[in-house]
Length: 107
Image (tube, rainbow, N blue to C red; front, side, top):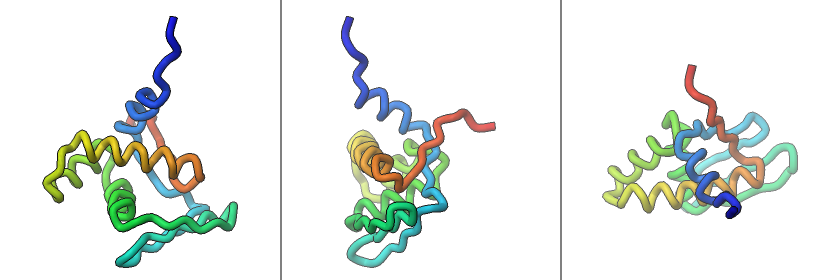
């Protein structure tokens, strides 16, 4: 028996998750970066412009997949590439407590 592929499992869950910024995190976008502050840890985190745009799209869409579709259409990129990049970004932000992922079905 093989161990489940946790990276693929995590990505699959993230695709249909609603991604949000928790109340203990504040962020502001600037032309060259987006700065996030975790008020619980008092640590700043900088996102490059691309990651900042991904975060904005995640905040506006009902799930990661919909955000990826919007960005892929806006920038003429393959949806699969955008989805992979967004999953990697979300995994990093989740680890730092900068976003939350709600994968429960909508009511």
